[in-house]
Image (cartoon, rainbow, N blue to C red):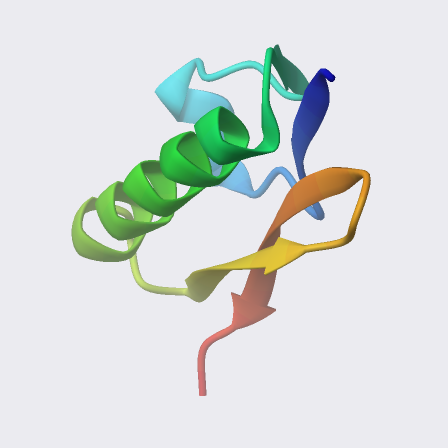
Length: 69
């Protein structure tokens, strides 16, 4: 069963990265793996105005964008 990976907000850094959302994967496992890799990359290399975390919403996987404190 396919699974969609999306992001809650396309901040400037996400837009500049050129990564397109939503993405479709053949399985939830693939979507979760990609989401975890992307959030790690985003949290390490982007400007730190936001934090990124993965949320499993059942039929889709979402990268949540959270304003940094």
